[in-house]
Image 1 (cartoon, rainbow, N blue to C red):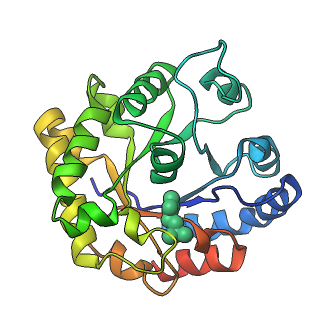
Image 2 (spheres, protein in one colour; image 1 turned 180 degrees about the horizontal axis):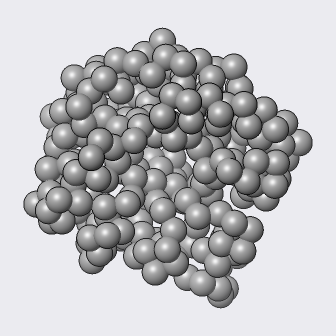
Length: 250
Ligand code: 13P
């Protein structure tokens, strides 16, 4: 069975509630357009805007950008998975490089969060990717392997089958310096093999995205690659027109 392509917008720390609501209203048309093209789409707004986006377009896939692995407790400033479920959120981005770099996210905390999401029946978009220093030292595969295997440790096959993994080389995020389509294919296929070694045929269904300076002009090249099942998009996902152009150009 062919894997359905997925375009997910990571809005990061952008858009007020009002701005998110405005996008969500317009996203009804985007969703119809994506359906016609046979593509899944979704967005990840800040916590504060999750309810507003869901309210305006309940059919849109909406992800939180992070979560805590405990259900409740003394963790000032954190958000728990049951709180996300309560407002109808069933996707969460885990281990984005900005969280790893600026907020102390580690392979261990990613793993705890993934295990908690499995228990809660949610879908993760689990991010892996090497820094510029690691890339230049030729350590990409070593780093991606460690992040992937440690992140997936102890997860069940069905959960892995249904999850999304995003390969985002840190040096290509927000820099306009894309990884080539060959690099994207090579690493996405490498990740799929790692999944195959641990989880057998779940590797056929797990969706693996590329992320990093994906734009309407280059999205087609990435998505043509056999093991690239879609894109996790930052900047180019913020405007409705640009999101529409991404879908159009797939
Ligand atoms: P850009 O598309 O802005 O490079 O961001 C990529 C990203 O980090 C998506 O999670």
